[in-house]
Image (cartoon, rainbow, N blue to C red):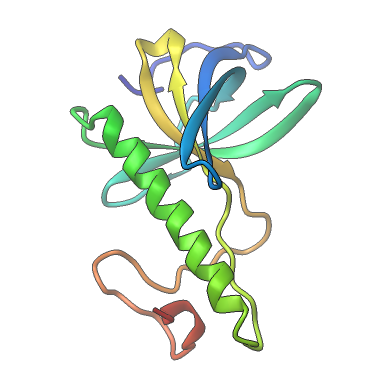
Amino acid sequence: MTTEGRNCAEDEYETAMVYTMCRETEQWSKREEKVKLEERPFEKGGARVCYRAKLLQGSSENTMVAKLFLRKTASRQLYFDEAMTQILAEEYAEDFNTYGVCRKIRFNSIFVCKLVERGGQFATLEPILDGHYFKHNDNDGYVIGNDPIPQAS
C-alpha cells in the first residue's frame, strides 16, 4: 500500500508506531506518534520513494522524510535492516571523526515507522536536510567528484 490516492486533509495526522534503536542496549523501543505524509512523493530512487512528512511529538512538529520501498512485497524486516545500516554508519562516522579529520561527517537519526491506518505499511523516517543536497555516491558504486571524505571506508 502506498500513499498514492490518499485523500488527507492538510491538517490530518494518522497514527503511527515509531520504533527507535537504543544504541546502548541494542533494543528497539516503540511509541505511538502522529504523522502526516504528503500525498505525492518528491523523489524516487532505484529502490525507494520519498515523501515529505511531519512527525508530531508532543507539541512539536518535525519535518521529516518518509522513505518507502518501491517493491510492494518489501518485508517489515527490510525496513529495520535499512535503519540498522544507517545506525551502524553513524557509529562508524563517530569513530572516523575521532581521527582529527579536517571535516566531520555524520548521519541523520533514523526511525522505523508503522503506519497503522494504512494496513501496517512500514516506512523509515529521518529529518529532512535543509539547503542544497549533493549526492556524492550511490549503492551501485557510482561516484561524483574527487572528494575523498564521502568515499571514506
